[in-house]
Image (tube, rainbow, N blue to C red; front, side, top):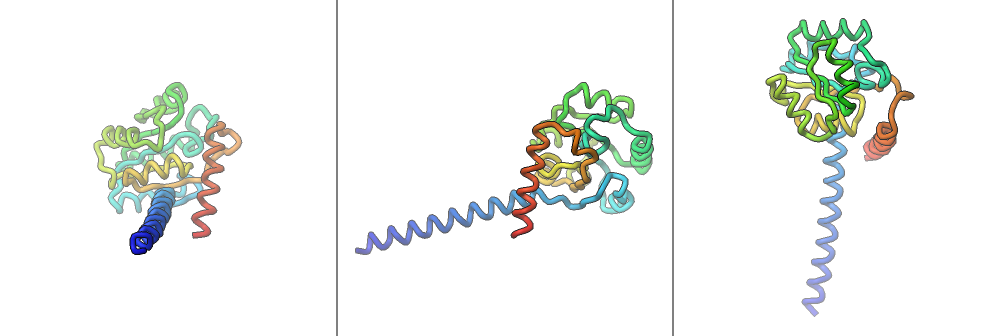
Length: 193
């Protein structure tokens, strides 16, 4: 009689603990999708506040963060913004999941170091960017337009994550459109928490 009762209690406890672990795992993941700051565009970022908070470097996504995904070169407005960022003392690195041809064509005229084919949200491209800037994660901001690549990767590395609204949704590739749908689902789950 007692062994049977013990087994049932053990089974109940096991299923309860698995349920708790699953829920906390989901919550931890969802928390990693939340940026520290959300803005419409990079031009709304108060750079002096970042500097006061000890941020000295900026890792930035390229497509739909700095320019639309099909815009090959920096706009004059962006060129001026990047000059201003660097004049304040910030180091800048572009980290993009796009191919070398796309990223190099954009970054080389600006004399900005870059990492192409990054496979964000993996840690390696963020580590490489930090090494290029010779900075620690707590001294670095990550700018991007996607929760599942830029924000997740930046938060996992301990960066100050800033999410911008995508510049041109119509220019996005297939996998980015899939990510956007997953982001919508994650936002609904977070909203209903």
